[in-house]
Length: 83
Image (cartoon, rainbow, N blue to C red):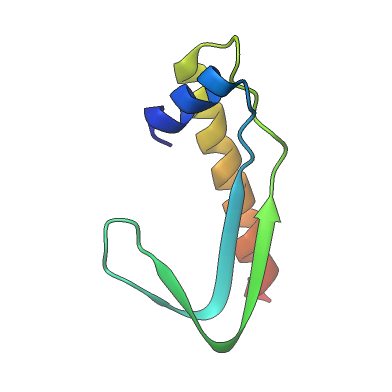
């Protein structure tokens, strides 16, 4: 997670909601973000996590919490399409 999204959430007072998408089968691009494109008729899953509050907290701690939440929902989405 980048510092910009944390700064924006701190300025607005809005919590950040971690969201992840996974599909199988899919193409994975060889780009900096490893963007994934689902094949036609692929199985897909979207996972949402609980909101991560930022307002009134240390920004680095909030960023680390957001990264952990994103990793958790990413694993949930991947496991939903794995079977």
